[in-house]
Length: 215
Image: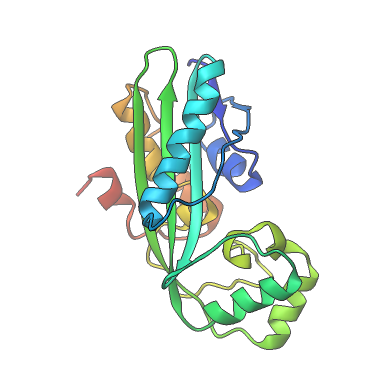
């Protein structure tokens, strides 16, 4: 196995990538994340993921994995809240409705020059949590470093109800999409990864077979 680099310091992405059972290094990318005028959400996350992978691969040998995730509610892109007031606004806006999460992934093998990128779009239905639950969740500090001001995996708040898409993508790293990319680049991926992912997330995934091209 060649040197593997994750171009992100996200604890969630590190947890998910660890499910492969491979040793990897963390070298965060530093790119300008300004959205271009009228840039569609899917193009935006794809571009950022590709730029992050390319930046790290420019100086490092090995396979670089990069990702970028955004929360989209109608015409608004929801990034990390600037303060608790902004976090409350986002959570109230998303309550009892569905929105979309887009995650772009990019692979760059600096040894061979091979690249791969993909997009995962997930519809995310939010439950009807109360104002009090919002206040209690904000008091934990958890929303402040999350796009859309929530973590899908937060056991205390559990903001999402009835998800039928990729749970891991909403966390920031769609593992089945990553498996496909690694296979395209010639890597042998663990066949039991989808099941390890579902056990880790306590989630019965209805889409992994479709993503992996299996009947």
